[in-house]
Length: 187
Image 1 (spheres, rainbow, N blue to C red):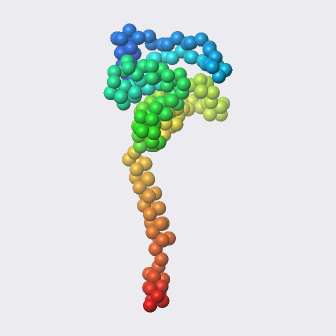
Image 2: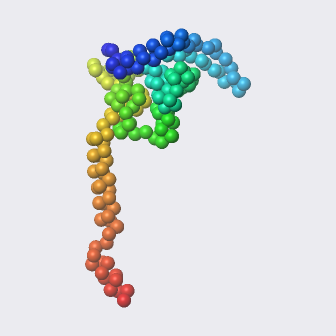
Image 3: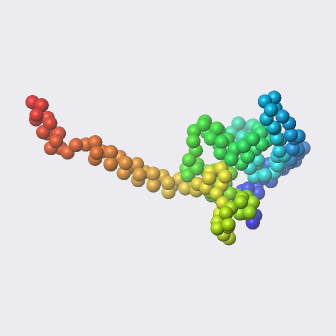
């Protein structure tokens, strides 16, 4: 299955800009090393043509209003340390640390569809055998499968808020006779 058009367009735009600046499309894997505390450090190769890396570098460049080339080391570090799920952390951090409800905010990776845009197979993700059905959708690793439908969820949320307000008013407001009796007793 082919990736959606917006993914192909994003990857081709970023790849063209990397090529125009003479930058490599992958970073080589670094040697295994041991840090001063005795922990093993693994520096994997970074594929700068992957949809996740292209999304990260585009998000950073758009947020900071800088050329894409200036954000390459940051995108490399993000994908090396956090992987695709790092995009959700990046999105939250760019929003000032506030949690993001992907039902109301379009996911930068899947564009609000809620499915993984790279369309991996069940074998690649290690799905259980009973879930391995033809056309089995896989949730987006960034928004965790939330569909961006603000009109639907806003109406649903407003109905819930109205019901909560009505319930709160009925439990807090005593009947009129009780109020009258209590006022008459005080005189």
